[in-house]
Length: 586
Image 1 (cartoon, rainbow, N blue to C red):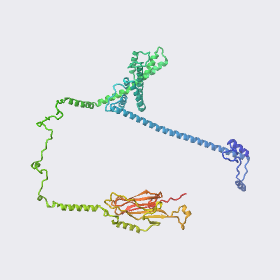
Image 2 (cartoon, one colour):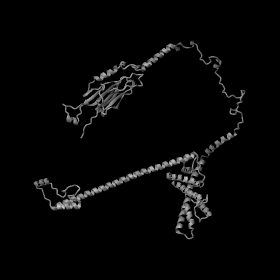
Image 3 (spheres, rainbow, N blue to C red):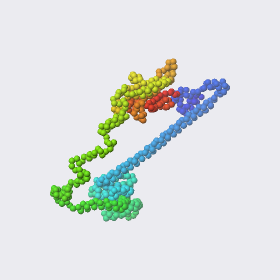
């Protein structure tokens, strides 16, 4: 039986006892569950398997292994297919985004090209292509201050250009072809005409063509008179008619009709695309011209008024008599005679004084009139000394009302702190909670051992000249206790407890003489010199200075259920908080 299993494993799986991926030298040995067989035998249920049953069982296992391998291969194929679909989907998304980006970039370049053309037109340094672009805008319905368009179709501009200018315009046309996708066919037609003009000028420069010929490049077999007739014929046709003519000529040339002048018709067919491009350009130019004429008719009164206003100014200036030649006084106003007997005077005319002032002319005329004291009611009269005394009394009353009782250089020992003492005594009279101790002494030690009130550096306040700065009184408590975590439960007990830790604080800061009682004091948490501690600073308005404490740096529990409280009431700022307890969970 072992030999049969070896043959089955080697034939189906390629495994041997000496070489298999599991490193099992007993791979072909039969596994016998002896304890199970003993229990079955004791119960009278054990049946010995035959050789055929063993072989069938081994083959069933091989079939199951093949099915597992097949499912694994299928899953791998599905995984690869899903990965491929995901990559294709990502590629489609990126292509879509890239396409949108390309469109926006093309639109941006087109807008810039349009803006550059319009700026050049407004500044009077336009190029021929700028005027062509302006005609396109007018044909599309846009309006400008100057709605004039080219008198002749744009393709005729290249006739008067030099070879270098034609080449520069070719480059500008290529820029419009890339950016202006809406009018791409028009700019391609312009490009075709510009290239034809460029080739014609190159031939003229080389002496192989006549300058200013209407149609060139037909070949040596076509006479000049015939070329003029062909030009007339093709110029009179529309784009669609030229397309039909080209198809007909190509058809006849392909069929090889008898008696047909092949050279002539091939030359004509080569020039038909040029006239098709010219026809497309002329169509758009005609639309722009019609819109321009229509706009001119609608705005004719405004244009006439605008044109007449400078002419009127010019005519009025022409009608003015030329100034006579004068001597050195020619730049003075008219009517100045140059002597004291002039009819006109350059000085302004003096205004007359009032009647009262005219009567009181003489010394002291501008002084106020002194009235007799009998003309006034005695109750309305004020004694200067009494008036000064009343003024001093009012000033003193205002100063006493708005000045702090301890201001004016009074030291902190002379300030009345009876209300503070009453508040501290009332808070001290309250009993301490479980595990609470007082936390009011200045801190001692250094580093992590420092715990308590911090001595803040002296500083100056804007209100020092009005109020005497003072440090607020306080009565604080710190809550300590044991933390029975797993470690402490293992190493300590109630007879030998672990060290106490800080579990929370209760701060009571007293501000009975706060000037602005509407604005509540605030607190800030600042970094300390040690990561295990932090600084808690309390800040209020005049006349109180800041006070700070160094406390344990742990996370606060901000839930009111766990004792968090921050209230400012009746001159007392209360800040109570406990630290969070991080409990161990499995």
